[in-house]
Image 1 (spheres, rainbow, N blue to C red):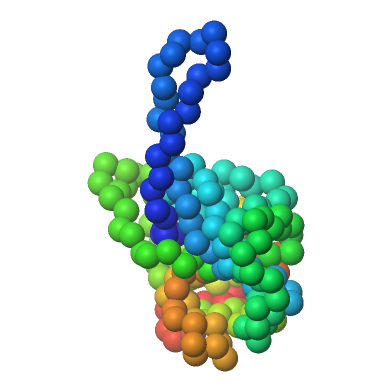
Image 2 (image 1 turned 90 degrees about the horizontal axis):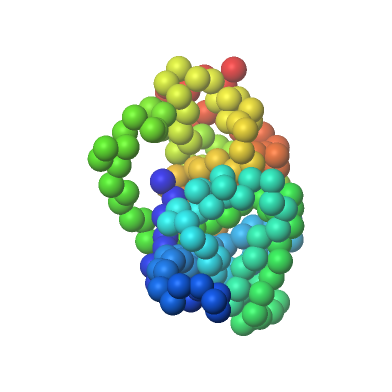
Length: 193
């Protein structure tokens, strides 16, 4: 589950000539890191979804992601630009999206039948210039390469660490499956093929 939202409520007024009743729309601000080939963008995504994975699934096919209040760092962590109003990101160029928000529990009671039962297994994945080690989630008995055949562009890897970057705490990342160079199972229980 990908969380990390701060709930913000806005009142939306109906256009002139309509009923004067106000509607309440809930929006969420998610703090993210977007990993590109040569830089990392850190900023805020504003959405009507409470989970980043839901946002990406519903926007599948959209090619642009908008991040506001962003900072642009090179791969060594040196800030290139800070505090810019907005970056438009071409989704095909995104390697990883790191969720910087707090992990929130989701109440699935009554909705269990809507979720596919999955097993958590350790894996090591190369995504462009980045190596991640963390938990991937596959249907019981499914081989590792099933992750490469998914219908959506991104899949989660939880409790993941960036290899060679000990200063970055483990977190959930969404991995662009079209940017994976190689992957392998770590430990028992998962079959590569």
